[in-house]
Image 1 (cartoon, helix red, strand yellow):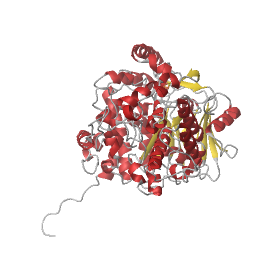
Image 2 (image 1 turned 120 degrees about the vertical axis):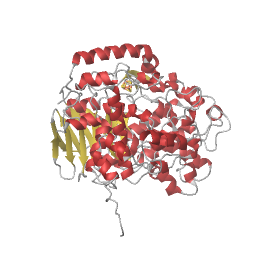
Image 3 (image 1 turned 135 degrees about the horizontal axis):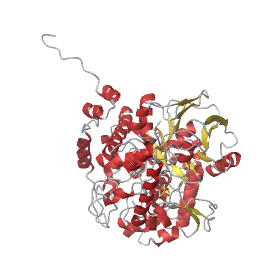
Image 4 (image 1 turned 90 degrees about the vertical axis):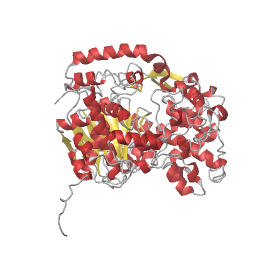
Length: 615
Ligand code: SF4
C-alpha cells in the first residue's frame, strides 16, 4: 500500500451486525484522494438513487484523507457523507479536531454504515478491531455526557464522534460532534446517524500512518511553518475565526436581520461582537491535532448565561448566525446558544438562521406569544434567543416545527412564512453575504451566490463550484484545514498551493503534479454532482432566496445597489466544466476524460444505430 493510507475501509451492517474489512483497490485512493471524494465514489456505486435518507439503504460514511494524521500542517480533518435528508441530494460535512487522526491510528481510513440497528449501538474501533456495543446507557444523553462516559470507559486517549438528542430525534439540521464542539455540521447528517440508531463511533489505537518519505515530509512541514509565521499565525492563533465578527457585521460580509437588514443601520453598535469579547471568558487556547496555529479555545463557565466550563469558544459562523443575523450583540448569549447546539448536536449555522427566521415571523405577527410559549421573540433580544434555541434543540413546543430547518418549518406554519425562509435548496446558508463579492473590502475569494446555489451541498462556502472549486475539493478530500494548509492560495491569483503536490508526494509516494491533483478535484466535484443529478435535482433550477441575490438590491449601506448575476456566473462555469447549460449533465466527453466511464455509460447510454431506408 502507498503511504498516507491505512488501506482499510470498514463496512458495518447495522441491521445484521455484520462487520467487514475491505481493502480497496489503489485506484480508488489515487483517483478520489480521500474524505468526501472517496465517499462520493463509493455511495454512487453502492447506493441506488431515490433511497429514503432516513431509511436503511442510505449509507453513512466517516472518512479521513491521506494527509490526516500525518506531518502535513492542518492534517486534522475527516469527512462525513450520506444522502442529505435536508436537501435530498448529496450530503457532506467535515470537521477538524482529533477524531480524524485517531480513526486512522485505530487502523482504518474510513467506516461505512448500512442498515438500521434494532436498538441503540455504538461502534468501538480498537487498534485494528471493531465491535458493535450496546448504547442504551448513553442514548438520550447529550454529546458532552456521551463523550465523557465513553472516554471514562476506554481511556483519555480515546476519541468519540457522537450525536446528541437532536440527532436521536431526527432533527434535519442535526450534526455530529467531537470534543464538546468540533462539529461535522452541515447537510443534516446527524439525523442520518440517529435514524440508524448509531449513537457514537469510538476510536482508539496507536497504529502509524505510513509515510513514503518522512524526511521530506518533515522538511516540508518546517518550510510551511515558516510560511505561516509570515502570513497568518498572529491573529489567527489568538482569536481563530472569532476575530472579525464586528467588522464583518458592518462591512456587508455577515448577513443581517435574516438577510434583510443592513449592518450599519440595524446593528450600528457592534462593540458586543468585538473579538476581545469573544475571548473574554477564555480558560485556555486549544487546537486541532498537532496544529501549530491552535486557533480554538475553551471557555470558563458562563457568567451571564449558565453554560458549563469546557464549552468551545465560538467561531465566526456561530457569531454571525446567533449575532448580527438576529440583531444580537450579546457575546455571552451567543456562547450559550452555541453550547446548547453543541451539547444537543445541532448545526449552529442552521440553528441561528432558524432563530432569525422565527424572529421575523414574530415581527410580522405570523407567530405570536401563544406560539412561543410566552417568549418575547423580538429582534436582538438575547434572553429570547437563548430560550428559543433551547426549545429548538429539544424539539419542544414550536421548536418541534422549527427543528427541520426553515424551508420545512415555513411549509408547516403557512400564513406567508415562506417569504421569510431564507435558504438555498433547503439548507440555511453560511454567514458570508455573496453580494460583497466585487466590493473593495471583500475577503479573498469571497463565496459567490453561484457556489451557494450550484454546489452539491447548497448553502456551503467551503466547497466551491466551477474550476475555482477544484482546489477546495482537493483540500477537503486530502483531510487538511483550509485555514493553514491552503492558506497560501489566498495570496496566489492562480490558486496554487505550493505544499499540496509536494506533501502529497512525500506522504503517498506517488509523484503527481499539482495539475494532476486538481484533475482529481474536478473528478470529485463531478462525482458529488452526478449523485445529486441522479436524485432528480438539477441545481440550475434550485431555489435561492432573493435576499441572498440582492433582488431587489438594498438601497443603503455597503451593499447598496448590488445584485448577484448568478445566471451569468453559472452559465460561464457550466461551460468551463463542460456541463450542459440546461440539464447540468456533464458531457460524455468530460466524464470519459475524468475516467468515470461507468457514469458516462449511465448518463449517456449507447444509442441504437441510425436506421436508413423506409421504416
Ligand atoms: S488552523 Fe485552527 S481549525 Fe485549522 S487545523 Fe489548526 S487549530 Fe484546527
